[in-house]
Length: 418
Image 1 (cartoon, one colour):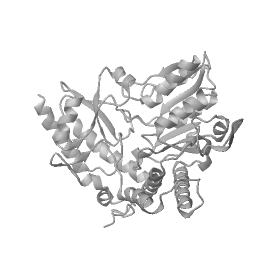
Image 2: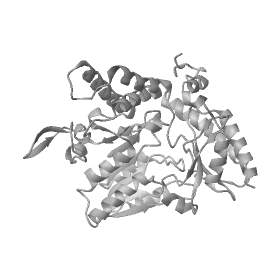
Image 3: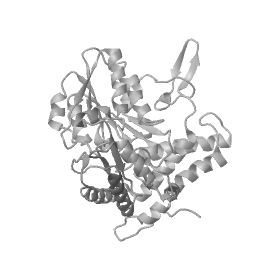
């Protein structure tokens, strides 16, 4: 039986029928430890609708071949599907397809910028500015580049509620700063940074900007052209697509000037032992056989999200977050990290006297999946003086009933932990 189509509407304002939408996610029907699954780990990875699963299955059953290497029918079909996914993703982000490098995800994308743009250009005396709330993927590559070039990494601090201190950020944009790396949405705090304003200020000062869009693309409409950054990175598996997929958008002038990051097949026009002529961007950054089926699935995920309407996704998740916040305020001894206005549906928390791993383990026994640990954000947790937190992160396919079951499980666990 085919899954309900997200175009099915529940009310007159055009919003989807969220119960029918949820029914299209097969994994959400399973049980864990004999209890219905409550999946609140969406910031870690998103679940996949049947449309995405079926697209990947269909590719392997009917179209499997390598891309850009064969003139037979299967090779043509595979190439058209792969490049079709690029075109869909470009429209989703409002960018040009020839400025979009397909890769394994945000981590690869940021390392591509680090090694292909920053490493050849930075030198001793230069500075790279990053925010306190960055994921390690937007910290470590810059540290590696700094170690090799003599540049330094500087930190833009946050306010206690988890917002970026914009005044301090502007003051930190000194002439030494050549690159600014900032997340669009924090994976720990849910803070939504005003990246358009930040990039405008940086551009006025000649600072190149890199935006980590991993936590933004799955949950809100993204207009990269309007943001005005130099680089924007996304990860497919967080936006209902397969793992091992993602993209880096970069201004065309950067892609033309940047040397290849990895050498091999497909990224060349001509090879001899005297030298190599590289392919045009974005292909010169896409060496080797890509995750073709994965990108077919990501193309299907983009179609799916477009059909839902990202404005409806954002409104639904804001509604769920308001409910979750209201319920959590009633739990004694619970501390929430990140209370900036208009945040995304991510709640990191601790309960007094309980370790985050104990909380998460006991919640799992109740069928509730949350993340515990440092969330690849050690410097951020150091700011708050804690070793780890639990994190509940919501998606549009979650429900109000699940929130109530999660809170009931949290109360039960709190009682067990004393």
